Image 1 (cartoon, rainbow over the protein chains, first blue to last red):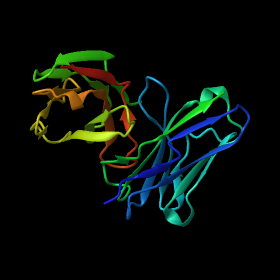
Image 2 (image 1 turned 60 degrees about the vertical axis):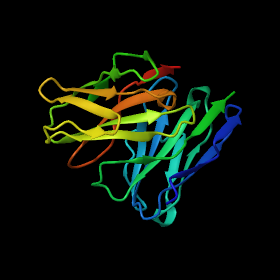
Image 3 (image 1 turned 180 degrees about the horizontal axis):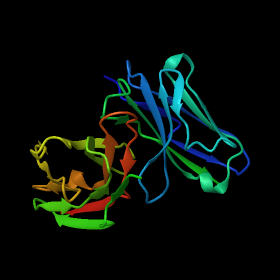
Length: 114
Length: 115
């Protein structure tokens, strides 16, 4: 069974440029999470989807961050415009449904903003 | 608010020896799950072991075991017969058993296994 897939693995951009990250969860997993992991820290939740509905986006900085999960499968996280402080690893995770405790993570995207 | 504390930023252990990583947490809830995740340089967060708070028996997975002390809100990870492949960041994490199941992570412990 394929795991959670994320792309790109690495992205380097200049500040004020837009950037997008893509996540394909494990087949059949209805719940999808995006986490932000700053250097030397544990991941922190940005947004959680149940199918195509964002059920928790309270930690998403909505002035520059947006996310979508069309058709309840793949998801895209976007930053526009990127700032220097956005340099971090962006992790995607999925579970079969909201009540399942174990989350399965993708390899993450390392973003560097210059 | 829920917090997870890992007080050991870095640890090292000789290959084949045993090492224990510490974790404490704070919550007013009674039903929750605790996890240890491993993150090697590849960045893939891999589940190591999982503990249900309502179970008194400590979870074990091959060389990995936990010491779960619910009253003390302590959840340490013991790695026996350490292997070079165990070198990674280890994160302790917590989630509620009911309602939203966001994971709350500690700041991690960097473990180095020395040959």
